[in-house]
Length: 78
Image (cartoon, rainbow, N blue to C red; front, top):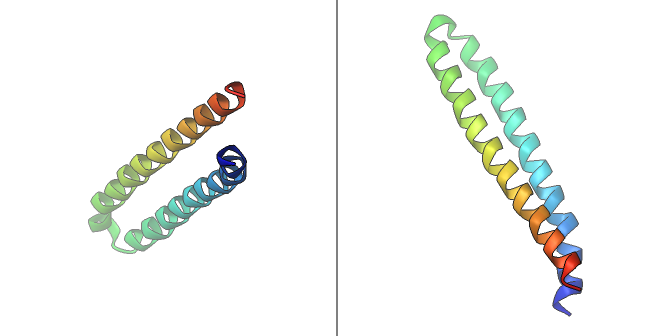
């Protein structure tokens, strides 16, 4: 019973991670556009936004890799 529930959750989890990645990208673009209006004063903020977005994307990438490992283990354990 547990295995069939995991099968249903994996595509949902993958879709949620993809959605989170799109949200991070969209938020980053919008925030950087806002800070461009500040001229030279916005440059440090834009760099901070880039660093935060990169950290978020790295985290999401690690989660996706972990999900793939779990899927692989689940398929080989049967």
